[in-house]
Every structure is written in C-alpha cells, then in structure tokens.
Amino acid sequence: MDTVTIPTAGSEATGDLTVPAGAAGMVLFAHGSGSSRHSPRNRAVAAHLGAAGFGTLLLDLLTADEDLIDARTAELRFDIGLLTARLIGAIDWLAAGPGRDLPLGLFGASTGAAGALAAAVDRPGLVRAVVSRGGRPDLAGAALDRVAAPILLIVGGRDTTVLELNRRAAGRLPAPHEISVVSGASHLFEEPGALDRVAALAAAWFERHL
Image (cartoon, rainbow, N blue to C red; front, side):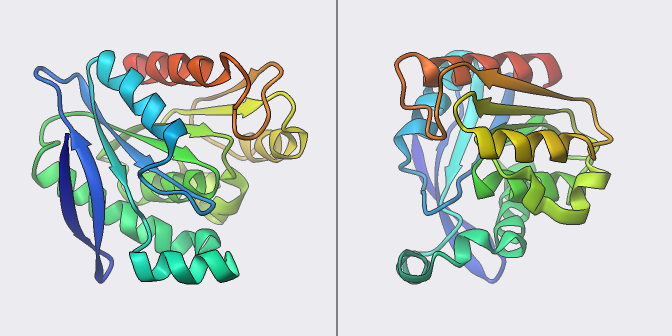
C-alpha cells in the first residue's frame, strides 16, 4: 500500500493506493458522513476486493482543516458538489497514472455514494460500475436521472429510512441497478457477518461489470 497525494478541486487529497499484480480493475472509495480513508468498514471491504484481484484507492475527500470544520458543523459531508469535484479529480488522476487501462468502479458509503453517482455521470467513459453501501443516492439530485453505469445499492434491513430513500432513488435510475438488502443489518453493518456480506456483494458486482 502506498500513500499518495492527489491534486483535486483546488486542493490536495490524501489516499491509500493498492494495486496488486495483474489487477482486474480499480475501485475508488468515496467516504461520507464524517468518515475518512481510515474507516475500518471500508478498509475491510477494500481488503476483500484486493484479495479478489482489484486495486483500491481509499481517499480522504476532505482536508484536515475541513475535517475540523465538519466535526463542528456536519455541513461539508453534505456538500455533494465538493465531494463530487474531489472524486472527479481522483478519477482523472487514476486514469492518467496507476489506473491507466484498468476498468474503474466506485464504492460510495453514506453521502459519498451521492458524490460517486454524480462523478459517474461526469466521467461516463471512465466509470464502469458503482456500489453504494448504506448510501444516500437521493442526494445526487438530477444526476440520478443520468447515471449510465450499473449500480448496486446495498442497504441494511434494519436501516428502514435509508432503505426507503434507496428504493425511491432506484425508481429514477435509468442505468441497470439492483437493491441488495442485508437482513438484520443496521446502517453501519456492525452485526456479525454483515460487513462480510457487503464485501462479497461488492466483489461480485465489480467482477460482473469490470
């Protein structure tokens, strides 16, 4: 794993990049709701994807100063325009460098899922698939009606409010899509076996579409 610095949206984003030999594709992680590249849940999913032969880039979408602001106000995590711009910068960086010639997928969690969908719309020739974990695709706004990449929406069965928001958002998606409900799981998938199920679903989706 290499720590990388990526120029993006008038700033620099820090990420952890892993590219196994003979990688089948790259997966860029979009964190949300106050999380970071150190999220144990996304790191667990990234490890599973790495074992399946995918390269991964876990990225801090907010700078250290922005994190401090967001910890007080919780406003930047809902700035989908900012998250999207940072993701687009990372997509372009991958396409020009370590992810060159590798099909790219996006894995978005919480509000990061909205940014992932908007970025997929902005870079349709580069993003081949999207997976959302406990995501808020509804926050992608008008981008929902324009997504072309196949989308998997993974939601916990006990996360009833988010599940309903995902179902409503899915009704607007023109792209091939599926909703996978992890039975008994809450929003953070902390229950035994829940995160393993998320990782397996994500790997299968990327294997199918990348």
